[in-house]
Length: 152
Image (cartoon, rainbow, N blue to C red):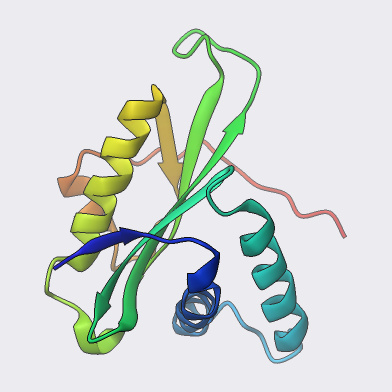
């Protein structure tokens, strides 16, 4: 198993797996503009990869089969982190045909090591039901007081 840091040349493979993730989680509703989401995702990826979005993947026979990303951002400093630099982990996904081989765990460990190199103090993520066990084994804790609001 060879983990690679993705760059612009992996945009199509990354996009394919990310859209599979959305479908699997039921996040693509009937009224969703699939083409617009694909275009916006690819544009974002190409504009941000290896700047404030870092992604890793695993290939099997030349095909990208597992991915994971770290998105960096800054917020106002707070008591636990005076730098305010944080990382959001997203896009952790393995194609169903390649699951239970430890791919997601290895990518997450790579993200954790890279985050430590950057000196990040806090990482957070949104977990699917299936992912909670893996995240827990790696030391992530649930935090129930966060809320979200979508502006129309």
